[in-house]
Image 1: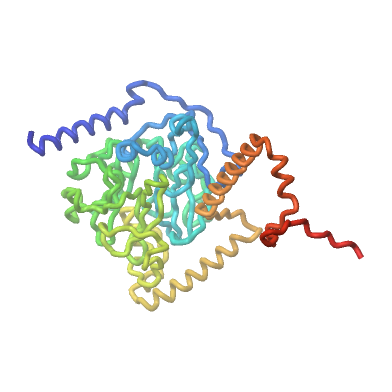
Image 2: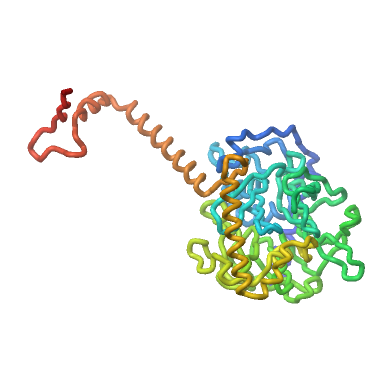
Length: 463
């Protein structure tokens, strides 16, 4: 049989599996939605992810299929990345898998901060992605207090947060007149948009109106007018394979995250009439998301198989195929040393259009390297002052280093297990009393010389 025929057979089998998996709920006609239970504050503030969705049945998508297909041998990865999996699925030998918090999706905000969706489906903030501390989860992270988020972005005006939930529907934050970007207000459902796992925008050059560019839960790219979200989606582009995300590069070329979680680029700038680059022209590292820094190098949420989590890494070369390097080994962690992109451009790469809000208008000075560097110093000082103010008692800002919290939790678990082991050993030792008596009075700091008997140090008398 010809090699091309084998490829077609494999693709056909994979397509059948995708359709069956995605529409399994419709086939079995089973949906179980029960009342949402609030998570205690101490659990919310820990490094662990609670099992909140045991009684929920969210409609699956190509994203879950890709995780299952690519990491079927690792239940740890499956359970940690997909928040909708419950404790019944996430146990090994009857022992529940411990899930730890880490970011799975990134977005840049107009104030220069980075917003992330974590694997608990909530939103967290960071001043700079290279910092250690995350703030969050922010208030009203969940739409309807029950729906974990897949991804977040902004609206074209860049003044409201937009989110895609695990129910594959799209939500937008209510307008907050006191803030530049609405982050903590309640979510509103955008009626008409469904079967969505990812979105960005495009602007019609003739009418000036915006369209949603949507990846549906089959991994197909479609378009819907923003002012008519209930319109029948129109297929976009010529690509024959499913994709998970779309991201522009600063030069205007479109990139895509394929079902193997590899970053690839479209062959032509007019991506709608182009195909994805060949599989051998890809970033060989598996990532859940990427985000540009001001030096035109990308951050990546790299999947670490050994831990089942993601790690924030950064490139050392400005090319989509360049590998991601851990931050503690990276030569170009601080983008202030070579700033090439403005905040507006960084947002545009994920948003798809130039943000409408007049954010950071002084960025016109970025054409002058010296002025840009001086402004970056001022911004860093302001960031430090804001951070110090936020740490004061007059604020409820909640900053956490989840790497440290995870280490503390791991060590506490090890200590607990060691303590239990010691107690078990002592309880089954018939000579435990003799052993305790035999070591009384032994000076382990200043042991007696060989051939002599150690005796307790005399207790000084009161004078």
